[in-house]
Length: 190
Image (tube, rainbow, N blue to C red; front, side, top):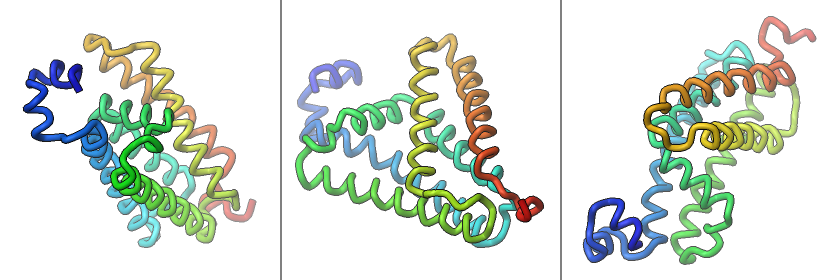
């Protein structure tokens, strides 16, 4: 908390007036990310239910674009979210706060798996294990973000280049994934 207060230009007592613990601070950083994931998923679901999607490629493109937007709007918060998720810090947080985050994360996973199940039912993508698909999409995105971060770090002068590289690499990953699962309405006889 000392480091955070210093970086924010606040005194530690001022920081504690907003966040009683590190857990509270982490929760406040996680919730906007989870809420944005929810918004993106709901928008994708509305498009699916309205019959707007014509192919799995469009779905995967929207999915990765949502992830890209989430990262590019708040890269530091997103990286912290990933770090805490990967290091299991959730398991060491106060039970009430950890339970709230876990419920929200679980709801996001359930919603996106349900979405892909319906995409399969609409014959937009091949029948695949939606648990594996969702984990692959999230893991692919996280890996590409970490790889890009390692190459460019926090160099403000290269931020645009880093985002361009990230976007290009995501497009490449999208093409690979789409090739393996896309049926498309025009290709449903395959």
